[in-house]
Amino acid sequence: MKKIIINQSPWETRIAIVRDNKLENLFFGKSTSTELERSFFKGKVSKILPGIQTAFVDIGELRAGFLHISEIDHDLALNRIMGTDQVDEIKDSEKDVDDEVKPRMSSEKMDISKILHEGEDLLVQVSKEPVDEKGAKLKTCFTLPGRFIVLTPNIPRIGVSKKIEDRAERVRLKEIISKHLPKGMGAVIRTSAEGKTEGEIQKDLSFLTSDWDSILALYAKAEPKTKIYEDVDVSLQVVRDHLDGDIEEIITDNKDNHSEIYKYLSKVAPEFKYKVKLYEDSGNLFDRYDIDRQIERALEKKVSLKSGGSIIIETTEALTVIDVNTGRFVGKGNMEDTISKTNLEAAREVVLQLKLRNIGGLIVIDFIDMVNAKNKLKLVSYFEQTLKELDKFQAVVLQVSEFGIVQMTRKRSGKTLMRQLTDVCYCCSGLGRLPSVRAESYEILRKLKVEIQTKFAKKNLLFEINGAVFDFISSIEFNSILQLEKDFSCNITLVSNDQIQRHDFTIKEK
Image (cartoon, rainbow, N blue to C red; front, side, top):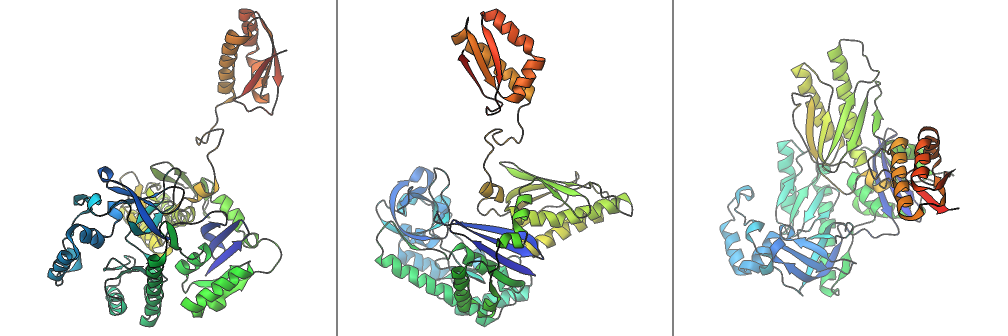
């Protein structure tokens, strides 16, 4: 059974999803920064760059957001280019054509300067937060997420999650949505809708269409460059997106947050409101469930398996590489059985770690080589099934290669756990290794020689260096110091100072 555990403080909100006391997912919300993702703005088009098919839209933030033509609603684009009447004629002629085969004008054949004009007001939604010097990424293909569906108010198409595989259930859900969906709107049916009643889905749909009506009303009255709607706070987002029959408790240590969640569930899922509990004991809520220690382990490269094997996770700019090792696991049968069991255990742990660490993009997993083709098929089948059961994000898995490698992709969403909680090391600049004492010492001696040549020839000098470098030079390379004194007619006094970094030094006259 799952628990949603919410630790709220004046500076940060942390939400953990725990299954059988094991951390599965982690989310953060900061009180000092405003989340823009999924927010709606009444923006003003400030600049159009046809060469890169992008418009910059002023939304009242520090930097203008950018809107690429591929993120512009198709019908809006056609209406602007061809005129409403002509588009209506095309739609009438396509009424009897299946959505899957309708011809659609590619965004590559459109010109953004014919769709948007500088100075005009435009309703936009943030699809990605600003990053470094980049402004927010914007779209006019709007989405409003609910418990069972994602409403697409200006994209009149109905989609169903690929994870709902039963054909009859897909048809049933589509029929329910078609029956209650307002004209001109669309929806994506989420995996959580599987098995839900028509009443439950209709209630979720009504909730979202009401929100959309509010957005349109606010847009009509708002001043340009203002935010008109934002998603619920992070704790309610997590509750909404992860609420299902497996939830045993929702525990929060903040009274106001407890009240907010209770009120929210009373509206959208009253059968769950009694599962909201207030933690009133002394001590940290995350410590109570051993979450902080599990977070620390989630930042380590090595993950130990119960059998004695392990997986090593390394993330690069382009992809993530995962290596599976048997470790001390020797098994009770033959070698092939031992390897197969380790790979199956590792496959499940890989799914959990990808989810917890929020790793997306291209992922390469080096499982232990197996000879038996049936074992290879069994591994991939089990891996795919585990992804479907435990991970909400879309993933594509290829078969085991001749080298025992499985390639996969997983949908990216926001920052990885590593990027959220760590900075690049100021000593090694992300390499994960430091130059050896020998290498640092020789580099410092080279710099010392240049300093003496240019500034300190024929002088008495104090040369302060890190203790480790001092020990190396004084014991191994002291003759080099004597040679420098001879070459430049100077006197060098070495001083050990552990306050100085290994790569640094100070030099001055006595």
